[in-house]
Image (cartoon, rainbow, N blue to C red):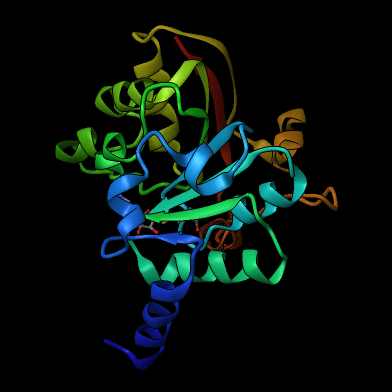
Length: 223
Ligand SMILES: C[S@@+](CC[C@H](N)C(=O)[O-])C[C@H]1O[C@@H](n2cnc3c(N)ncnc32)[C@H](O)[C@@H]1O
């Protein structure tokens, strides 16, 4: 392991914004995010596969009356988001280092109000369809931790994941579906503006935008 990673892991162990294995709160947080962590009753929004947590931090700045939790399995990545949230003095941010498949170990039914999926791995191989974060088993998992009619948003550089998701949604109970295959030419871009009205962009988005990919966006409510 690189020295940089080791230092980040040491910081994560001391950073209260990071909920990870080895800390007592990791086992005890299910159903208690409002009372034990945020100490308020504001809505909880998840960013899944958050990487460096660009959306978690930018949205927390923009919406101080909502709580944001970035979830990712990579500690060196969430270190970045947690460090930025500290530098900005944000108290409405947490990062959960966990596997998304295990979300129901950390959240109770009704605890989550909204879910953002920002450039998740598209898993292009047919045999990996079940691992795509908009496959039916994940949608069912999101229902199991969320309030009724939870809002789900997917932003992706992958047209495969965009088409796959629209196809899956044809057979799901959903409402308020809107989508675009060219976000930067769509009024839906308004959903992605930061506090300075600039589009929030992540590391992966910048990489794919530089290669000329358009950005796809889907928003819907799960019934
Ligand atoms: C393509 S990156 C995108 C990161 C970030 N959203 C961005 O746009 O820069 C996908 C992220 O998903 C995380 N990831 C993949 N599978 C996961 C899983 N099953 N549970 C938790 N995180 C996962 C990876 O660690 C990685 O940070």
